[in-house]
Image 1 (cartoon, helix red, strand yellow):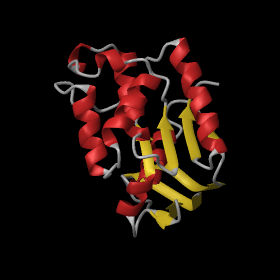
Image 2 (cartoon, helix red, strand yellow; image 1 turned 180 degrees about the vertical axis):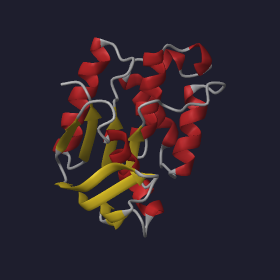
Image 3 (spheres, rainbow, N blue to C red; image 1 turned 120 degrees about the vertical axis):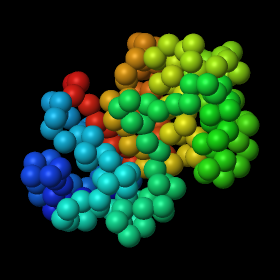
Length: 190
């Protein structure tokens, strides 16, 4: 489901990735560990189609990120290291926009189910500006899961989550892998 072959990525003269190759088949959880500055976020940005490699190829869900970035984005759920939310919106409004872009069928029910799963259904109509970091992260995770993606890309997804939410996420990832989803999990924490 993910295939990276001989990828090189630079930022000006600085080499960020050099001859990176790996594959992650469907139904697998790949932990991508390394210290800060090791290239984890750079790799995720390539897998999402947010940037293009200087050399090599990146395929996600059967599509080349250089030739078919929109097809890749349709099949990927992405949780960035620093989640981007429109804090003036409510979770229902924000997830409604995300779900509309993905043309999610049964959107209202899907939003209710995800917010209930994370235990924040009672805040579904509250402005996110007043949310804790962990609550915002639960909305970001919900947005990534909303369209039931084939590939889930997680960049430091535990930021702000309490112990109960970490356990929920762990169980969810195992279940998604069991159902054939590919999960790519970046962290600097073991």
